[in-house]
Every structure is written in structure tokens, then in C-alpha cells.
Image (cartoon, rainbow, N blue to C red):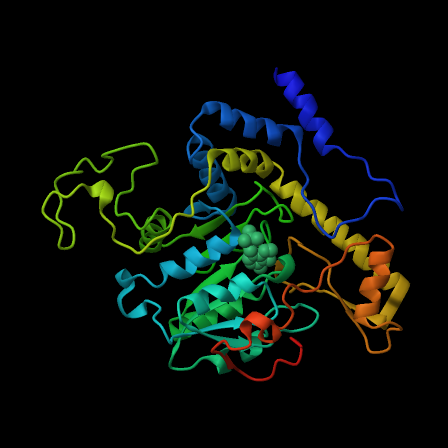
Length: 393
Ligand SMILES: Cc1ncc(COP(=O)(O)O)c(C=O)c1O
């Protein structure tokens, strides 16, 4: 049976590409037979919701990244939302994010890095990015801080780490929270540390285009025990109870506590100390992710190799007509893409170039939402701009 399933899995994932005939997508998943067989094993366990595979996935990823706790969630967007929501908990007292508080970010990125700020009625403060790093211009970060600023939420753009030293310095000086959106940068490092583990909270995405996949999925990385407890609760409906799915009375005091204004002894399993979500994943997703994780380092290495190859090719062919992306000297990127900015004397405009590539079956992507301030759904968003957004545009 296993051989037959393995053969089916192999056939479905090993589709040879025919040069000039098949479309070359800008991104895609790299699956192995084992990934799918792990998924099948999880189905056959019959447990389905988060179980042994999820526990192993969270523990292993935490170890590989050097994070105290990794919490799996159902997408990178949910990871960003959970990370942000965690900082709104009243358990954080004065430091809790409240409506009207400002959060510094950039406008040229993925929308769900900015959305949680808006969804919790905080105000995004946009600073410009630098070219050719496409990350926040840290030189103007401090100027953007006002008396209302409570947090910094930035992505490591396309796997290229932003200057974490500079960001953490400003955050410490002004007592700000830092959320690292690490969705595009799994395996990257800055100054010897894995990105996503340096700020107060970091996030990951396991959508197929990302470094490892489980179909849909994400994770939040946290070191601070208080934030861990809040995030765990918020991921799991806001419950106060920390029993694993399918287990009861881990606290050994299920019917003996006093919570809020509830009657004494109210079942701890149904006590809610946060206004939470349900962002949990299934064990099937976790099993596929666990198998993929074995290749996390080699995938990142391959991405670095491909990035170098493509960059050199474009540099050699086009010279100064395009600007190729660059990493900070203290960074080891885990590339999610290869970014090119066309110089003014490039013979085609961007629109024409994208069509030219598309006609030749070569996929490409813009830098996500471009300047999010110009997107139809964001024209009326409350915000502040610190300095100019010249490079963002
Ligand atoms: C920087 C960044 N953050 C968040 C996300 C959202 O991840 P997901 O698609 O898993 O929701 C993405 C998606 O590509 C992303 O690039």
C-alpha cells in the first residue's frame, strides 16, 4: 500500500518542465514523496486536529531557530494578526497597544503586515525604504517616533534582513515593541541570529511559495514567557486553559479556581482570559511541514545559489540598466525573490517588460502591493507619513 501511495505521490510531484513550452512560474513549492506520505500518515492517525506532528513541528522549529516557543497558525497573515493581537492584551498594562497608538512600518510590502495595525484601530506610520535593499530606511526611523508610538512592525523584505541592530536600538531607547514579519525570510540571519527571533515576536508563512510549505500555514516565534502565554491563549479561542487538544485537567485544578466574576470552581476549560481566535492547524498540515523542515537549510542555500546566479546573469547582460538587490553586510539573506529596479535609460518601461516576459512564458511579480497607500482598499486609511516615500513610489 505504502509503495503504491509513494508511487502516486512521486508521479504527481515530479513533472518535468519542457523549455520554451512550459510556463516558468515566479515561485512554487518543492515537494518530495516523503512530504505527502507524512501527510497520509497523519490522516491515518485519525486525530486530525493538532497532535503529535504539530508538537514535533513546533518543538523542532523552535530548536532550529533558537526561539523559546514556536506556535503554529493557519497562515502567515494569521501569524501577523496573532502577533499584533498579543500586544493588545490588557495583561501588558500601560504597554498594551490601544486604538490610536502609532506603529511604524513601510508602505511597500505585503498588505497583511499592515492590516493588523488597522484592524486594531492603531495608526500606521509609514517610512520610506532604501534601494537596493527594499527595507525600511533605518536612518529615519527615530524621526518617525512620536509620543504615540508604541511599536515597530516590519518585514524582512523578500528574505533580505532589515538592519535589526538599528531597529532594536531605537525600540529599546523608546520602549517600543518589535514585530518581525519573517514570512519571506525563514532561515535568514542578521548578526549571527536567525531573523524572526530577535524582536518581541516574529512570524512565518508556510504558503507554497515560501521556504517550506504545508499548503496553508504559519507560525509565531516568541521568547518572552508572558507574551507566549498570551499568544497561546489568543490562538486557541482566548481560553485560559493550556491543555493540549483532546486533553483535560493539565492544571490539576480544573474545578477549583476563581476567574473574573464567574462562580467559584467554574470549569477552567471554559474560562476565557483573552478575546481570542482559532488559528490552529491540522496535524496533516503539521506532518507535511515537519517533513519539509528537514530541507529548510538546503532550500535556503539553494535560494542563495539561484539568487546569485540570476543576479550575475542580469548584471552581465544589462550592466547599469538595472539595479540588483543587495544585503546588509551583517545579513545572510534567505531569498524569497530576486529584485530588479529599472534605471531611467532602460529601453522598456516596467509595464512593457512584464508583458514581454509573460509572452515568453516567464513569470514575474511586482513588490507585492507596491505603495499600499495607492491601493483601492486603503485610500481612506488613517495613517501618518514620516518624511517622503520617494523610493516606495
Ligand atoms: C511579508 C509577508 N507577510 C505575510 C504574508 C502572508 O502570508 P500567508 O500567505 O501565509 O497569509 C506574506 C505572503 O506572501 C508576505 O510576503
